[in-house]
Image 1 (cartoon, one colour):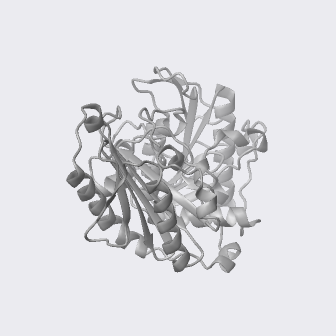
Image 2 (cartoon, rainbow, N blue to C red):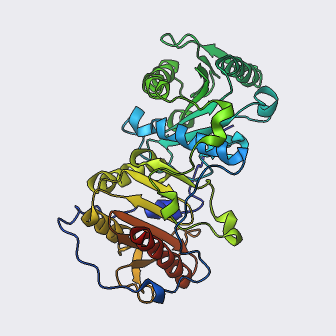
Image 3 (cartoon, helix red, strand yellow):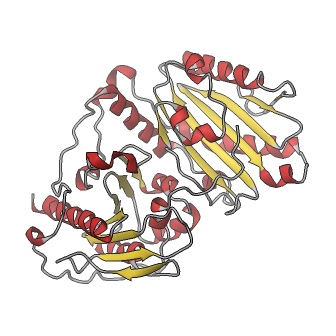
Amino acid sequence: MRRAGYVLATVAVLLAAAGCGSDPAPVAAPDPVIDINTLDVGPYDANPRDMGKPKNPEAAAMIEAERLGNALPLPMDVDPAFTHTGKFDSLVFLDPKDSALKNFANLDDFKTDAPDLVSGFVDYGRNDPDNLGIEMVNAAMIFPTEQRATDVAAALERRDFGRNPLTQAVGISKYPQAHAHWVPTTQAINLWYPLGRLVVYISFYDQDKVYFGKTDLSDLTTRASRDLDVLTPALQNFHPTAPDKLMEQPMDIDGMLGRTMIRPQSAAGEWGNPPGVYTGHAGLAFSTDPGEARKWWDADGVDRFADYGNQLYRTRDAAAAEDLRDQLGGPDENFRTAATPKNLPIARCREYTGAEKLAVRYYCSVAHDRYTAFAAGEQLLDAQQRISAQYAILVKVDRK
């Protein structure tokens, strides 16, 4: 199943990645004295927390999927041309029907074939910003045992293969265990591959060749083989947690989630992904322009990314954090400056003025020590209150 126009539905994450591209400042400017007790945090919780361990099996499985996401290479790691993404559904999933994977694979009978899925993570990339080139999908799913992964990969391939009478099996010479197929009338390949306790799903779809009625099986198999060349060693370094130990794994990494404003229950529908912490590199999966974002991500030394009630970045040092704050909150061709929060002059706020109709309107950012936070809201006051609560949390962590 393929959606030809995989376009942006919400741009909160996109705008978080649309920096100005400046080099980090050599020295951080001293902050003015700010009394966090005078900040307007509205309804938001302005206290840090110890996240502890998962409270239920679903949360534990989500955390395992996030660990998997840290190991799964980005599309641009496979091919540097794949620096673009698009509409965001969830990348983390317990059921692939609730994730971005539903746009690229027929999952009608997934629960019948794979009832014991633990969780999974999916990455999407394309080599053309307007989706006129090739789409790449990489997903990895965790199962209780290696035998189950082997059985599920074969079952999912059988199900896929039987959907179209024109489907033909495709061999990937370097990976004889891979189950791959294509339909000769279209330029696409789908592949299921067991790897330890994982099942890897790969899909390539060439919009350009489909439009002009051309097919090239050799190109598809070469791309799939090269993809596995990158994914296989990376995922072999991922060691899934034993099913009976999932509830014992910590929810946080380096205190990042504990420093990030908690999501209000009243706004639970705002986010497509569960709260999570990622390495700096893996966090690029949540940008709709990872190629551009990677420039300032690397320049400012981002080594941790957390997404909870706000987004939080850990940078190289305080100067880099301020540079990142200015990129996320400063004006550019699609933004104009908006008022800073009450009693928080070091924050930066901006208003979206571009053409995207579904864009969240207001965005604010702030830096403290090595950390930069980013908040969004449909109303300016809401964005200001969110970033004020976030700043108070960062300061309180330092005071402990």
